Length: 297
Length: 314
Image (tube, rainbow over all chains, first blue to last red; front, side):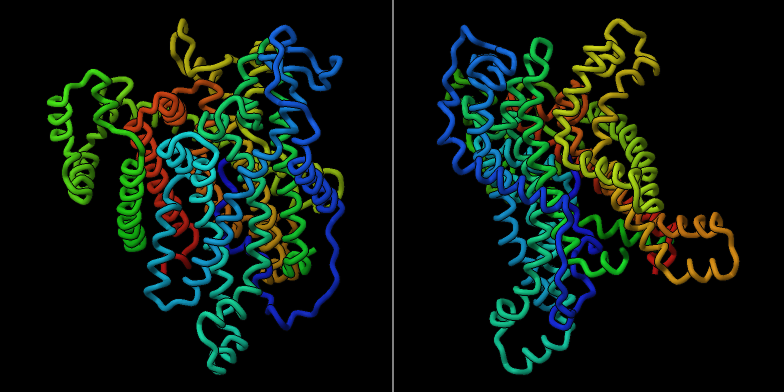
């Protein structure tokens, strides 16, 4: 799960389309993207209200450990400490989602700020920002996140910081590419000629046009970020036991792989579903914005 | 061509300089006292002072950085806290094993990715295209640690087709066949994500090339479909090279999960074990060596890029 965060200019949606002159045409998302949007909405709903509906995820009964799925009172069975797997899965949704979502939100804000600033600055400002970000591209992303998380110590906030750091550069690159493209357009000359301040140009003229591709790109990053965040927990760098969280559950259940093989598959499946849903939604949003893909289809 | 490679080499120097600063900073932000962790709880104040002096920890940060960089450049990567031995040989052995795994995974990923991507580009509708698209999406989204576990459960432990973990059979001859058997499952697991990404990128790159004017020109000159396709595929090589290079690079970092699950004795497993032992010199060295390998790999890809696409050399 290493890889999708490189920001290729080709991946930037909307490239080549003038932001204001393109005719507005109603386009609709594909069926799969709409299903994905539904699944995402469901996951968010579970994350918000789920923990209130299930019982204590840490309540375990040692006499009732490793019950198979479908047992009375335990729809997904129990884990090695006799805790209800369904309750832990539902309760863990909130943390697993937050651990994936917060780094992307952070990266979206910081990355856009850096990218737009770089795109609007002169030669040296642009160089200083983009060359510094290049340094972070020299690391294999996951390994850098692991090193940062390991240095800061385990804990969900540290895992969020580590992921945010590795997600900022690709977002900044998308925002910078988009800003540079806009900077050459006539309406920017008009804005400059009218005496608008740089801040006003950045926030009023550039930001509204940079935001859509960044949002699309970030949606696709959420799936990746969820997998990474769970991965950090899996390695012992995320939340600490006995907190219910999907990655930690996978690592927890791995020790029973021979006695109860399905146990490890349950939280892994939850990670997979969340990740696929965000990726399909990201694809759908990109197609919606991407003029080129329509011309091709 | 040589000038182009030389320019890329020069550009790598500031990047590596930045990398060294980032790694140095991660060493410095670590909470806790490295002297205490090296000496253990029984260290006397005199021993503490002596070790602090010897490690240069009483010097200002810039001085410490220069000293550390000097040691690193001369191959001295420090001493492992948990294993009490030199980090450098440990990390280099592990790097070799990681490179073996990454290379195998890269071959699988490129073959699979190009095949599925080409299929998706040439048959744009129908059940095969949909299947290819779903497969690519699935492989990108899947957490590698769980797929690895499933393969272990069903193919290794269950069906007994492959060894469950490790790199060689402890009682075996340590030969190529032994290595190959141990390599298959982790390599396939590690190849999944890059294969999916390569497939998707290759599809759009083939479609991009197919919509170019020269394809129409060749067709109108009466070239057979097969000949046109050869020209078209030739033009997808640069972008394929870029994405494949990036993916192989990311394999170097991503294999940590695969190595942890399959107990493959590479950088990832070393770093994973060092996390649980809080053995920071090994973690830093592992990340440093991976970043170095990554930068070198990018240089090689850039050079190849210049070789296949003359426009880039200018």
